[in-house]
Image (cartoon, rainbow, N blue to C red):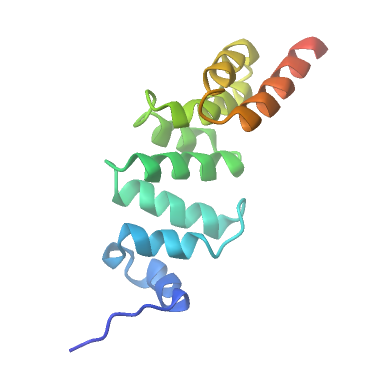
Length: 134
């Protein structure tokens, strides 16, 4: 009988050898090891998004990881699964900002205030500054 690997190193190796055997909590443990904005970080979160399409947290994390790498199309794919979730509003705003629609981005950042005021304010400030420059 095979033992179940519990070390993060073993779990990280399974991301590449047998990703379908990893559970959501195991993938979250692996993702925590990688620095945000790295290709490994993105890879683990996208794997979660694809493997667990009904899990909103997986979709939100996958979209944020894609945005951090500048991949608008992947971010859009994951965000479409949770557009009505208030936790997605900042990512939706960032995506709109990346698409050049600062006005709509501001709307999403304002809608995000009750969920994450600090981050929403920071992003709103950036969007408003971009609008003033035009």
